[in-house]
Length: 297
Image (cartoon, rainbow, N blue to C red):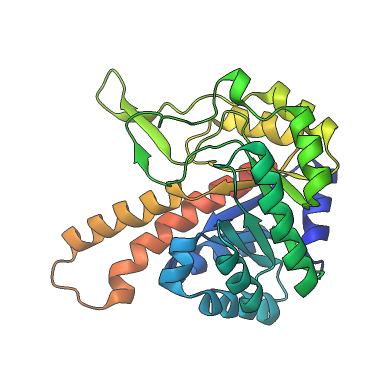
């Protein structure tokens, strides 16, 4: 079975993207794995610092590795938006396959400095862990929003510049790069003419993605995938995106289906029965996204 680097490289050559989906419980993990297994496509599981704290890094690592080994299936684990060296050390110790060191809130020069230190530490412990860096602040919360948060890099002048991307990759030595190309964390929702909430997330700068791909020699990662238009996904992947992150859509599916389940089955106390609709909801969302990312629809 191919390792994560080979999987990402193959995705780039095929013009498709690997789906990355966050979890904080075994329900989401089971749903994501089942969707990927049904479609026979690789998948990356992510845990943010908060998700890792709730679930446990060792627990997350053990579950993902068990699924990979027992099923001979390309499922991998990523430490999503890791902000401190303590968290980096914990992720390395737990056996994660990849780590995002996110210093994107810092000034560019400091981002390079801190990311380089993280890369050096991880390389000293393992040659197999992929390391991702990020340029451009795109927010920090996977939730439903009513407006675009202040400070988000969405204006043309604030998006990641090709020359900055090239320098960042060269000086830090990262394996993957997450740029700001009009994406943001969370889904910005507003009611349409019929009062139905719809996503009004900004459109991606596809031209900038192509310029970034030409400027660096590492795969590009699109964060904040929830709420992005399908056409933008197709164009972004065609222009050089190799991994797409989805989280808020999964959280919404989990929450909405759980609420429905509790209302419908007020006397039920068995967790696995109450949570079955949430599992189905997440699986449906993930399957649709994986089909899109892998050109299966």
